[in-house]
Image 1 (tube, protein in one colour):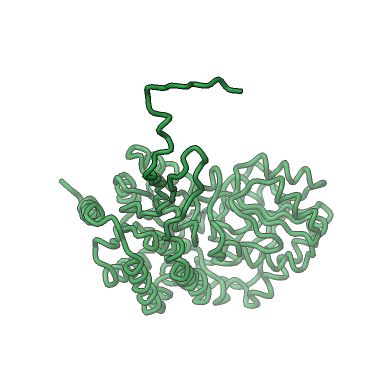
Image 2: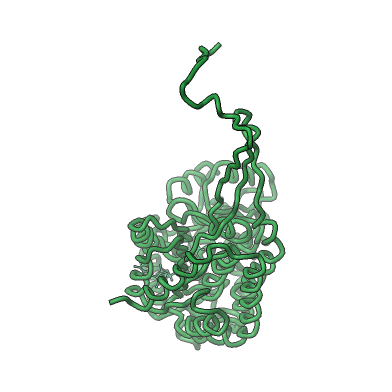
Length: 457
Ligand code: NAD
């Protein structure tokens, strides 16, 4: 029996095969429809996200889920005509006077699997890129944010025909069947463990994948850092969405003598951000009881192993709030230092010289992001030259994700491929090389019978 996702896929595939070209006007119309629908549903989506998390500040939902997607749509609309243009390519001397060009072409039917932590942004930002590139899209949003997924599904149903964009909802079983469909491209955002499964399923169909995964992104404090400013920026990156951010600073490497002043600066910033403590309306809750219990267990293990714990004081009325927590010098073999934290817990790891810090990062999986803090250019460049990560922000956290002008993606276990802006358009396009032979065939001398073979000089 053919399942619903298979039928939808077959319908999208059939229309793509019948009409593989998609004009600029059609692409712009799809992007406009998405922007209009997103703005019209903004209030409902913000409420749904807050319900799914049990509380989430409206401002965070607006900035990082709605505005970021609107920004991507605006950027794509502004540049799409140029991105779609056939580009002339240089012609090697022996092929002249042939002509060479690169023609971006839609891939066809693409699948997008998205996670719960920014449930609108991570479903729709890849969709913007896929639609700009002229594709048909099937989306599988996260089951952990069911109200938001429902809102997304109805927004999509009201805005697009099923042949343009369709939503398939469900949990891991549905997701596994979804990733087994023979898409022309599969775009996955989520954990590294599930990313491996998605890559395996896609490989069976030779479906190319983009994997936007997770990992432990370090923040490195160099001797030339301004501690107050650094504390505020790290605390901001960690408090956003209560640390449930793929590019949140996961742990901090800090010169040993500066560990305590750094902890004070970070805790001081948490206090200024949330004067009422964790119950502040500007601080998000944790997505589920299971995720909360995991964070709790991590801190308990650190405490049992002798690490000093600093917590933002205050009542916790909402049972799913987890107060911002700093952990000083935890042992390396506990869960906190082995797994991606994905919550508002920040370990501070002291180092004695910068080489030790470089070695610490180099000995681990390549992170999705790296943050270096220093007012000294040489100290900044040391990390830019010598470390490997998906992306970097210097003297701040997380903001590189907002630049539509920069590719966003991981490396190694934190992901492969990239999107946002032109990088997203190219991820979802086939850059088809074309040669137009000239009237006069400059390669006639390559036709047999071969005469006049000359030895190399
Ligand atoms: P997850 O991997 O558990 O789930 C992501 C999606 O995969 C969900 O839609 C889920 O239904 C689906 N899924 C589950 N099992 C599947 C299977 N067998 N085959 C195919 N799909 C399957 O991730 P999560 O808990 O929702 O999100 C948190 C993780 O995502 C963190 O590791 C975080 O770092 C990462 N993340 C990365 C980025 C990025 O841009 N790189 C952004 C956000 C989150």
